[in-house]
Length: 139
Image (cartoon, rainbow, N blue to C red; front, side, top):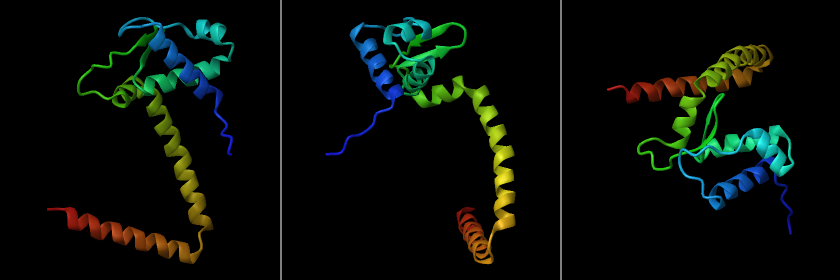
């Protein structure tokens, strides 16, 4: 029998999900604040925040900076929870991409300086295959 370790934030996520269902929150209702949830569940704010992010990505809640956590309207047509999450977090995603540009270019330079000849040939072959397939797709 294998025992699986469950992260605390996952347990908190499940508990918050249960609370939303059992307390009969409705779309648009304000959910408990991070401070209230921390006190109610006896866990750290970081665990609460991570669980709330999971709820948000799952489409169960919407977080409005400075206003609070609100129960999401699950009947929104044509808009997935993930798409809405991307829109709501556009600024922080831009920051992540900026950091990736800095870090990834440094990592690529490091990899290029330390690459062996066989690895370089493999990458060249992959690039050529990509070019060939891309040209085949152009009408």
